[in-house]
Amino acid sequence: MKNLLNKKLLLFAILFSFSQEIFAQFVLSGEYRPRLEYRDGYKKLNTMDDAPAFFVSQRTRLNLGYKNDRFNTYLSLQDVRTWGNQSQLVGNEANAFSVHEAWGEVYFAKSNVFSMKFGRQEIDLDDARIFGNVGWAQEARSHDALIFKYKNPKILEVNLGAAYNQNMAALTNTSYTIAGSYKTMQYLWLNKKFVDNKLGVSLLFLNKGDEVTNDNDNDGKIEKGEYWDNYSQTVGTHINFKQDKFGASLNAYYQTGKVAEYRGSLKTPRSISAFNVGLDLNYEVVKGLTMFAGYEYLSGNSQTDTTIAYNNVNHAYNPFFGTNHKFNGYMDYFYVGNHLNTVGLNDIYFKLKYKNDKFNIGADYHAFLTGAGLRDIDILNTDPTKKMNSFLGSEIDLYAGFPITKGVSFNINYSIMMATKGMEALKGGDRKQFNNYAYCEIIIKPVFFDSDKFMEKKLEKQAELLQK
Image 1 (cartoon, rainbow, N blue to C red):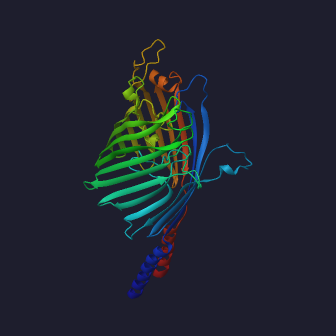
Image 2 (tube, one colour):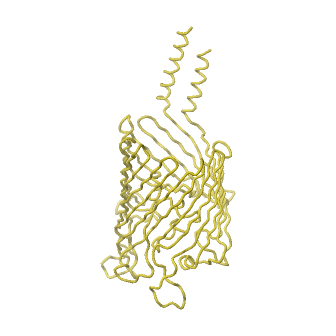
């Protein structure tokens, strides 16, 4: 009897191992994320004539993933819409699903240390300050790119990526005119763990090329309609440390290269010299309750330095592909499709977060100051070098969330902007208005089919039958 049982258990083990090779892993999943938003001073200060905005947007995704020991593929179809932006009798196919991700990854060895990933994909590195998937935005961010990867946690992790974008498969020229994108990009990212994985150090080099078209007549040096590529380089490091209840992270990045700007009617390259530094400290006071304190500086262009030498250089830092919503307040006054090539930013913040298995809750405070001189807008002021107070205002973000059931969660947020005259001078609007923002969302992430779990259940039933 004992030998029979051992044979059955051996057969079960063989079946389980064999099934893993045959079925590999196939996962079919989805996402439904409607978000209700109330905007009354979001991204910019209100005026007396502005009425609040109130709407529901929704992200819907269908995801298909297949993976075995030699390759990995993933497809994510996405629809982003505002409730009511289509007629009830839909006849406009332009509002069909788009492809958010469609990539394949090939492993060069069974160890999966070396791989090549290609196609439309999210790129999310470190704390997402330079490369992030912008997951909070309903549309999110993805790139058409090729990435070579080396991943050995005991030694080093390396990503070498490149992208080259075109409007279409053309017969002549390489002109690229898609708004909100770039023509070419290459990056190298290295990450190394130290001190039993308590310390992580990343180095990043990013070269980004944007096509520029001269659309005005000029002195003949650059003809109207002629295009060329401007390149900028970002280099820097992200360092994070975690031990027991204490954690810290540091960002330091420098940008150089060229950016195309109008000088009168002529669009010409302008040199870049800009940088970003940030320090975040956190401490877990009691289990689940964590305090944060931090500071971030993003350099900008002074409005009060009128010297030719200074103005021949662009000093404004650009966090190109970052998930900027997570850094400088949830009301998105800075670097979320705005605030580029202006006076930069100083952000001093304090946060308090509590999280357990049943819910999470938090409160953030931000004090915002300009990163460079802000010109005094007093109508009596005739001195272009006279500065205003650099303090722009304070923001308070209150938020909470909890799981409703497995695969379903709910989030809510309320934010207030307390602006100064400086913010009014920089962004317009009326600082005396009550500027606030709120949203709530429900997120459902169903897993329609998971081959691993399916086979586990199937083999569990087979084992039960074998034991009878």
